[in-house]
Structure formats: C-alpha cells, structure tokens
Image (cartoon, rainbow, N blue to C red):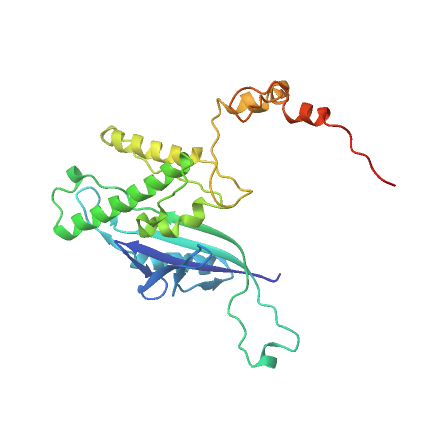
Length: 275
C-alpha cells in the first residue's frame, strides 16, 4: 500500500540513446550538481501486474537495434538498459493538490531501483570479415564502450582515485550501479563449444573482476578493496593491534619516551582545579 512500480527501457546505440517505450525517441543524459546522472526525457510506465511488464519488455525487444553479422544472424547492435523503480505514491498536501493551483505530481519519491543491463557482445575482426561498413562501425562502437567499462572496473578494483566513468555513454549511465550503496551482479553468457574457448575465458575473467570488487558503503562514494591474504594480519591478531606505535621526534629520530603520547601525558604535572 502506498507504493508503485514503474518500468523504463532504453538502448545505447553507438553514441546515441533511444527510448524503446516511446517510439524510439532520442534522449540525452545530463549530470546535475550532485554528480548524479539523469536520463532526460526517458518515459516511465506504471505497471500493476506481470502481464503489463511482459508486454512492455516484448515491445522493447521488438524495436531494439539488431542486425546480421558473420558470427550471429540476430546480433544485438546496442546495449539495452531496463529499469524497475519503486516509488512512494504521491501524498496530497493539506487542502488537496488544487489548493495551491499546482497539478498533482505524476510520480512519488524513489525508494529503490533495480536495473538490468543487456550488454552487446564484443566482436573480433576475424568474426566480421564479411560485414559491411555500417556493421563494422557498430562493432567498433560496441568494443569501445565495453573497453571503457573494463577500464572503470579495473580502476574500481585497484581503488583508484579517478574512475573514468565519462569514457562512454554506457559507463556514464552505469555509474550509480558501481558506486554508493548499490550491489552489482554480472551474469556471464558463454558457449560450450571448443571453438569459443578463448571468448569464454575472457568473459569469465571479465565477470570475475566484477565479483571481486568491494566498495566502502559507509562513505557512499569510492570503493575499498582489501586483499584476503593481508586482512587477517590486522583483524585476527588482537595482541598485535594493541602494540604501541613508535613515535619519532621532530629530528626524525625515535622518541626516547618509547610509548609516545601516553608517557608524555604521564610526565606532565597534574592540573589543579579551583573550587
């Protein structure tokens, strides 16, 4: 009660974004003052049942960009993002919406969100030998965006200060999926054929790097990764953690007090308190 769910579907084709639930209308992404990425012009549909959801997803799949390549007769030529957003139903102010001549809001406050990203597969030059120029350009754009995503994952994995989210449209819209309090899961699609062994291994390595990423949820910004081989040295041995640290003097030599600020405070005369 008091909640509603909306669905939106859009694709990233090359360097352009199209709303698949609004006659493939071209939309843009903008970054606000709080570093949040917003898809401007994206249409959201309210859903109340499974049949409505299936209808919207089927319609989006029918208008998504596909094509024939040397490797696949029905190849996806774009990345597709499907968002399910949980919102609070709009609450009428005292006196109703019409009391101040303002129309009622269409959507309420966002409570939660889940995104499904269907990535177009990377393409090797050996698999696209018989493709036309347009198909080769599409494959180049797909590989470029996947490479940008890989660089972002690598930077997150190495706890870098700069994450290149602006490397492509794909990484820009996926920023919120890799930062803050979000949880990311990658589902790898591989082939059992021995001829695809190299591609399968690369896909598994790609997914494994996402699985190993860790982020600092308390700060809600930058990820933090701890090595499993180093972490027990700090947390399993409590006696080692309680050992005093060596304090250096202003000249860089070890402090003769040995225990640092604790002995310094003990050597000071006690303060007198006036009553």
